[in-house]
Image 1 (cartoon, each protein chain N blue to C red):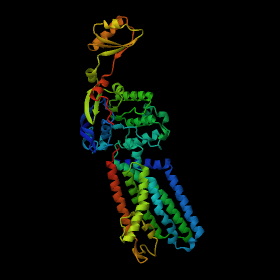
Image 2 (tube, rainbow over the protein chains, first blue to last red):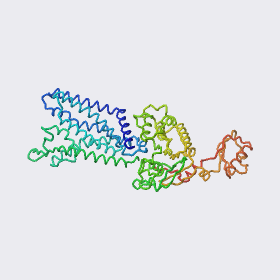
Image 3 (cartoon, rainbow over the protein chains, first blue to last red):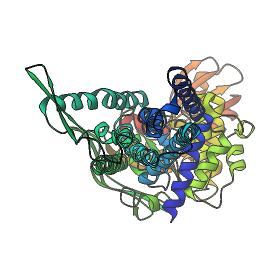
Image 4 (cartoon, helix red, strand yellow):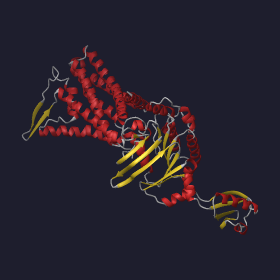
Length: 269
Length: 304
């Protein structure tokens, strides 16, 4: 019970950090700009009234993956490492509070702050879709749900790296490199090698947009073989919905356990 | 209340930062923890405050292992280790409020804690641009906020100007009146002599000595006094006093006298100086017993 109370207190003060440091306002501003761009570009280059509701909703869903990455880096990148980098751990850690309570208190604050950003974004997408089509496709709701699962997994993954390093900038850079380069290289190599990249988080997260494809949920090919000239064959994999969810949950659970254990043992040298 | 180290060891690779430390500090008193840079002082204090994990052995506070039962062990402990960073987005009042809430303490007195360290007028300013000394004061207030019975302080006057150092020394002295144990590491021997009743010395990760300052004074006292007079001192007249062994003239008005005997002899020597016409304005033991003990036990080593 006291652990839970301490965790809530930790969350409250960590959230205050996001407000006082203006991080939350900066990312909300970025989100508003992105929403404005999506709306204006679609209005200028096309006519959403002639699209299917799923296609219109997909305009928003396709950027949500990037938005989740941004919020995870913004709110989670230095959440743990800053305690070591700025020596605030000397003030916080010698208190009668367990390390995992600190870890999860901060994690909850990061998830709440990111969720606020995502909610603004997805509500805007829903209003935009409903404006042109009079309804929001049920697949969009699923896409939103998968985005929140992705947020959980990526935030846990970011926290894990924030625990590894004692410098916030390093942990943010490493996660960004892993996400934008390493996972994509893995996905690219897997197409050449013909191996399903079930171990890649971006592969799992692709169900955020895949769910809006086809005429029903899961109406897309799991495996496509593309012949690129005579010498090269590419195998494109798409995860099943259950598979994407499982990949994201495994990342969440593994990162959360590892991060919590490492932080509990980490020393202020 | 007690703090105990049982075979407490901290090893980095092949280097022992602390080697099988066995010591028990008990009761309401101030213990000065001395040693040169790299001796293992901060390592010991970090092991007692859950900032480091011991390689082997145990750090125990009031019967609880700091490693295994950290929340119980640290429930009644205030700490100041190195110069902690403060959350720049919080004011001192908010910071202390946060720590109070996290400690789930009902006896927090933020106003008193900030007044005690001279930071009350800064209570509503964000800590981001505070100087090192101001941060140190706020961190000390954070250690005092729940009125803990044990205080673990690592060079509490570090980074402060002379006035600040004197003020913090007074704060620590006043804390002693409230039946607390204070374990304080320091490089400053006069500070420890001024504030503490006991002293522990450590070097190369090993405890060399743990004694009361009174015992040290008796063991390491130099039988010599520094005398400053109003007028020029006649050395020959001083040499003629029977208990005087030697006289060294430091300036026309200042001499160092070596004598044979104890505190009674020292008192007699002063009266004889006065009766022989030396107008004494300052009369004190030359050198500090603690300094002598330190130099004998540790020498002028720097381990860094």
